[in-house]
Image (cartoon, rainbow, N blue to C red; front, side, top):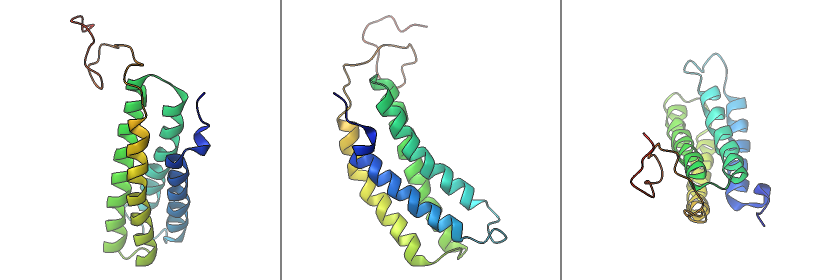
Length: 140
């Protein structure tokens, strides 16, 4: 039986990242935020949590891996966005470092979670994106 996604360490950490990101972005002065960092950062933090839920909602390996790729990209972008906060002095450096540290702490949990995906539970959708075809019929 599958675990409830809320019990997964990777989801708990992503949710912590979301809370930290929300606190940081709420503290950014709207007039100083000329590059809409608040919206972009919140989008990435929300992507991390929602895509974990999406991956847990389906068993197909390729769908889970597609969600994993989006989560990884969102986490990397969020960490990169902290550089912009620092450059533009949009928030306290301690909070920026806290968020960066939590993204670093997310990474091993994410890797363990992805390793738990069952690559044999999949179907060939013809896209050749995540899984190579299981036969010579690629579907094109």
